Image (cartoon, rainbow, N blue to C red; front, top):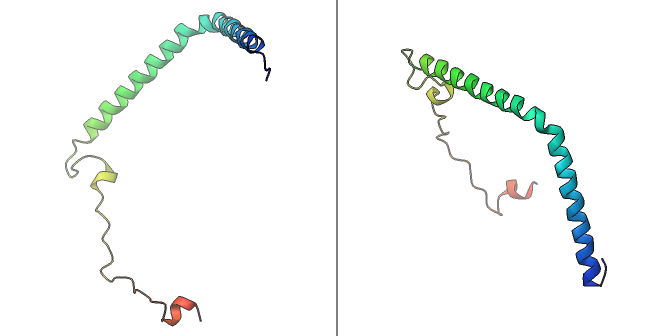
Length: 96
């Protein structure tokens, strides 16, 4: 890096100007695509809403509380026998 502050400020100004110019050029290139990408985004949102509505209708089937197999699954049961606690005096702790 230069030791002179004027050179440092000049380098920053040139770099910022180059990046702004590049951003402007990329914006003008992608500008015609923006309406199509917006329409595609809206279409994906509508498909998601339709899928959620169908899933909500399936959740009302009898025999399930929430309609989700992950939520309706029974909770795992803990093993009633505790792990043995070894001390340094045990032969298992030293591996011999």
